[in-house]
Image (tube, rainbow, N blue to C red; front, side):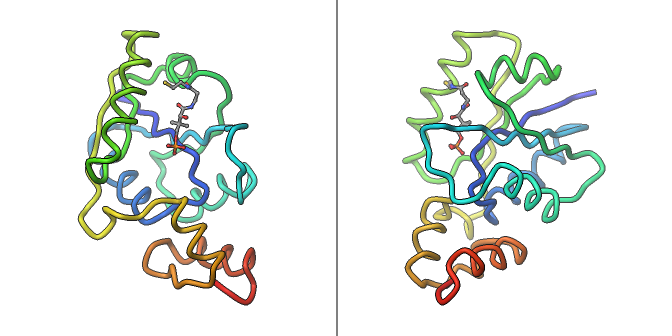
Length: 160
Ligand code: PNS
């Protein structure tokens, strides 16, 4: 049974994330979407909101949504995952992902990193840009699933 962890902040879930979740379910028997408690980032949505939105948008019996604190590799090992999945968009993602994967590999050899490419429509989407555009009144309906759009409209009433 091949289990993968797909970690991230998911603040909020975007169509790019959904694409990666669906691709990873084709490769692994089970996938855990692991939402990181990241104290360095000022989150728009609470952990519970982020988890609920992922569950609502990506409901699959082989998918679990969880939260984690501490090191990702410790979490992955504790859960018995053999791989960490990350999405790759443009070249700019590479350096950050390369650093993280190598640091994780320094910490453990028990977990492999698998990088999946989003489809080209999602190449430019990031949670950070979605938050910024929505907060400034821009239209993000093609970038996020409908339940996330709904929550953004709630967060930025006269805008998103
Ligand atoms: O969606 P993000 O914000 O790019 O995800 C980054 C995340 C959560 C995967 C990364 O920050 C992480 O793994 N955090 C857990 C703490 C940890 O293991 N840090 C060392 C990474 S080399």
